[in-house]
Length: 322
Image (cartoon, rainbow, N blue to C red; front, top):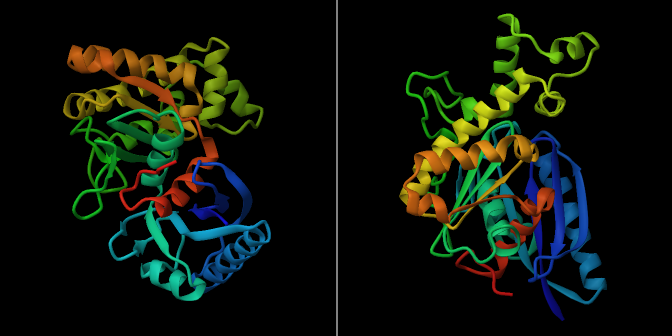
């Protein structure tokens, strides 16, 4: 029987699952809205995993294990969830043991940003790289590092918190308690607050008219305005790219990566963001390192979490063998 793995991508609003081949193809899919309450969520999750396992076996596929990508701090060695940032009821939960005991399958657990980086490295925009930086740009900024073709987690499994790299020591207060973190300039919540602040200070923009028309202010709406030539919106996107490029320039000097992969909602506005990011890296990083790095959009989109989670099963080193 052909071996496959089940990947689980736990998000604050929805949970995605899939049966994934060793070649990184999703064969079967499932998803459901995130349920609050630990036991309720576990019950639904176990039922969906068992359903995928039954269907895989019906197709003559052998499930080798279950990989889980989850938000927040995780002790990967113990398979322990310290807490989920946006899902109440989860604190110091031994998720790996709970799932293994009830499923009778091997389970591996990792941070969601790590599994995104792993998926893009193995199957997406980072294929062929030796050193890779991957960022998910959404409400927050998640990061993953591949160094010498292996996922780098750090001795306490807390490496690659790139969103909390300080780019301005006197900058805005971050949710982590520090000031001027990259996330405070690039995260979508901070992005929109800054747009509102500047509009409130009197800046002219077509966004004013759109807000009066009851359009919801979002990064996508600001991107739409920028594409229509709104100078204020173009300025906001350029500054966002410059902040991101400044942080990445420092990492380029330290890690000398082949590839930087940018994914998530903010990164969907590629033409507004990537030019400023690349230009800033070229300006601020050492020439040898900056000329050799490629800044790429993530290739796997919303599938990266499921594919990366499943890939945890196929190799103990965190890199897949096709």
